Length: 366
Ligand code: GN1
Ligand code: MG
Image 1 (tube, rainbow, N blue to C red):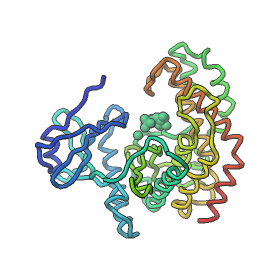
Image 2 (cartoon, protein in one colour):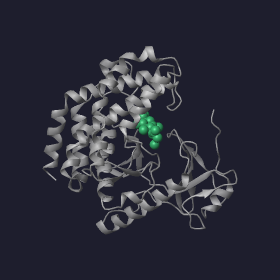
Image 3 (cartoon, protein in one colour):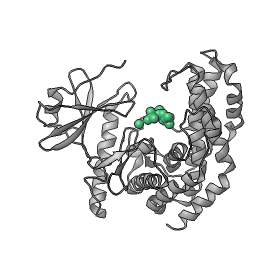
Image 4 (cartoon, protein in one colour):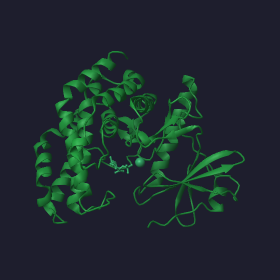
């Protein structure tokens, strides 16, 4: 059981808040510890950054401070709502974006956005369209941000060939002695190795621009207004770093356009749903389409396939390594996740033409 950290009076004081406040734990995330506190000035969110997963919290906070400042100015210029359209950091009394306590823990504080909810999964196509719109706006508002000035929080995060290299390493070492059990999945992966580098190649050839990407574009990282059902803003900016549009789009589709959870073992329930793809694509392209090049648009379907394949080979490699990265509930959990993702990959491959047509349809409306 992980040790539960608490918000001490010293931490509140560091952010200029009354030191006798009560911090209530907010459940949901798997990585950071999150608390909410009601103050005379309003409600705030306090988070302890997990510095085991994120070895350089300073870099995360530099990225978040820079990006949220930029978004706030952009929203002011565009006549948006800077209070709700982006997360807002509350600085420490010393003017820093984070506070390091006596135990060496890193803390940050953001203004709570009221009247909005982060949903675990979309309740229907309308909500998925809103999620597409939120990540599309994020991308579009940051399209003139110099992406290469951001820290790379996790190097090679979506470098699929590098992920494949790690899978090969795991196969060769076979640390957990599980390789025989995974032969069909390994064969599935090997058949696709030659195609898995296309995004990285286009990037290397200068045909795709580096953008500011979010890198955790799931439904639960979008706040949806409780009254209007409209997207308010995107949250969880820990992995904001330079990347490709196809990464963020593809990762959203991987999770959002699937008909079952990523560890569903009954594969007859696991499908790639084109109507969910269309809803997300519509929202995303209406918001970001104008900022994207023709080549970027053309890579969105392959982004969905590659992001799904990539996480599949990450699950498979972790299974072979003995479950050292992803949290698992039973021994074959990672293998089940890999099978599930590969089922989606297969269906996406078969529906590639339909995906292209949908992208073209909404791209032409931008
Ligand atoms: C991890 O923990 P979560 O759900 O935010 C992983 C993602 C994977 C996802 C698969 C930093 O994200 O890349 O797509 O699991 N995040 C990291 O469920 O590795
Ligand atoms: Mg996350």
